[in-house]
Each structure stands twice: as C-alpha cells, then as structure tokens.
Length: 237
Image (cartoon, rainbow, N blue to C red; front, side):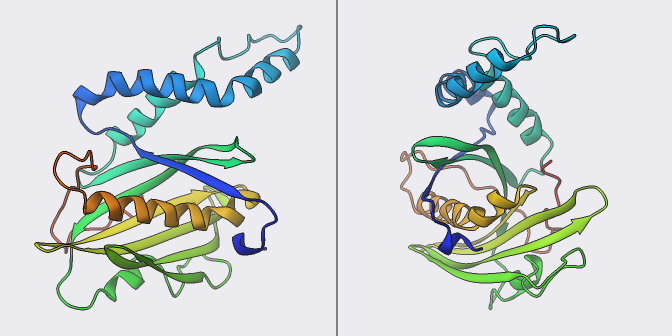
C-alpha cells in the first residue's frame, strides 16, 4: 500500500535541530513545552498503566518528555559532519501526534558542475546492495529546484528489515546552486507507507529557506567541496 492510497490524512511538522550553541537552551525550553503538550495524554495513559509492583519507576515525570527528546536530538546532531544538519519532525493523524520524533539527515554540498544526474546514484535510484526489492522513485519539483525521492525496503544485520528514504535536491539561486542529500530510515511498516510525502515536505521546507531573504530566519546552509564523501550512510538510529 502506498501513501497515495492510504485512507488516512497525515500532516507534518518539521524543524531544525539547532547547530549554534547560543540557540540551544531556548530551543530545549521550546521543545519541552511543545512536545509535552503533544504527548501529555499518551504519557499520562502510560503512567496509569504502569504496574504498581514494577521494580522500576515510570521513566518520566510530568514535563520531562520534551526536554529529554530535545537533549537526545542535540547529542545526535553533535556527531554529524560539519556540512550536515539534523531535521526532526512529527506526523499527525486527526490532529493527534502519531509518530515522534522523526529524523532526517540533511547534507549540503556545492553543486557538481553540469548535469545533476550524479545525484541519482548517491540516493540509490537504481537500488542499493541492501535493498530487498527495486526502489520506488518519484521526481519532486519545488519552487527553487527539482529533485528525486527514493523509497525502498532494505535489510541489514544491524537494523533487520526496514525502509529507507533517500532524496536529492538541486537548489537553484541567482548566485549559486546547492545540492542537498536527505536520508531517513524507518522500521515501522505503517510509517513507511506515509514517510515519502513527509520527506517531500522537508524538501519544500529547505527550498523555501534557501530562497529566504537575510533576516527571514532561514536555516544556515553549510557546504563542502562536491568531491567530499557523502554522509548518506550516517546512522540515525
């Protein structure tokens, strides 16, 4: 079943994990309020269902979920190459959060000269060794460049059966062209059925921020030479 035939409507919220030290504490406070508001009912239900005779205490106190997730995301972002950023997100069904947090690795590179077809191999458009069936490939058009999104089932010893989504986008501006590689992995097959459009939403977010004027709050884009090793295989688990 593909996302286009799913009988549910999924909406997405995506944002950046901050790269600058000065932005971290305000972001943690913001995330604590935001996420605790989204998941408070689920956490309370889990707390009530926690066995009274359990040897372990319930892992979260009221108001702790959001800050715990935020600190975990910052720790993951700290281990990324300098030209990469971590995007976090949530998927909503009927205005209730269903998947959280979703992680997408965004790698920014100076555009290779000429035809951007080299991006096809970087995202495994014709398949990767770990794929268990041919990938599903879709082309994506944004207001500031075109790209490709690849979704496939894969199997590895470390992750077992999982879904991979790799995407590439060439952003075109008046003064520069930038290539962006996106990577995410999902183990839940229900999530796999809808994550493709979620990654496409990230592509549109990045394209809009690429074209934003100074002072509009766009995410800083970080570049390395086009022949640098791609980070597509960075572990997001």
